[in-house]
Image (cartoon, rainbow, N blue to C red; front, top):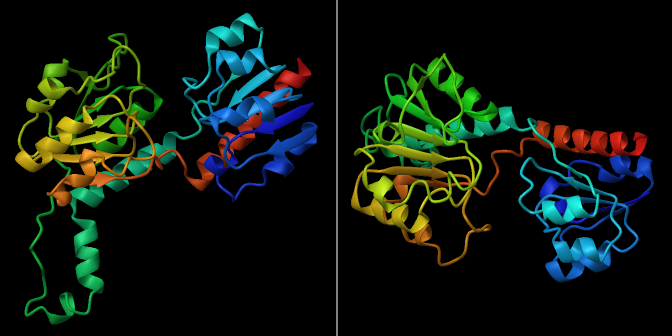
Length: 310
């Protein structure tokens, strides 16, 4: 078998991909792959490993793939219909990043609620705490999570873990089901209108017809003063231009690990926000703990092993 990895850089350099996948046959790895390089790099390949590189209908038609392995949970970068017509199975990996996403989500929430960056810099700066006439600095407010109404948008595996942690912090936890089908007796299910009135809204939903632009201008205008909106799900769920505007007009806090187009473009409206203490942007990192990426690679290898065994 010839196995080709198209975007190894998205998996980190602290995992030996050759050792994991080389045991199945010839293994070729590329750091990154442009769209116009995909077909050529997949010539004579039996199996492709891809995180974000598109496997389109044209790519499938011009190659002889026998298995498509997505090193992620989402498979929106694969033309599933074309793969089905060509009898090529598509295997993804689910559940590997739950702990990583949950931990990073709260790390981001706490960093903003506790003005961590400001106070860390103040404490380490010789012109800061060292020159203070009193023992404390109260220039930036910090807020407790306890007692806040916390809404999880999308109560899947990750959303459920978020809900449990929020409850441990003493939050009044509820959830909004984006599909309308999710039901959980432990937490109160609310309407979208009710969700918009919560103190903290944390998004853990996929991007689909139910969630695309869910938080549009109309929804964002309904957020209560002092509210925090957190997106650890997918870009495209929030109107990014509108939320950038609102941050500077009202006391609204926004934390996002994902954007509609990644990486962030240099002229993105969020980079022009004046009230930067109300904004936190991280580069789609929540899924990527060392442990999660190791598990992702192991489960991807298991997908290949299962395929070879039939």
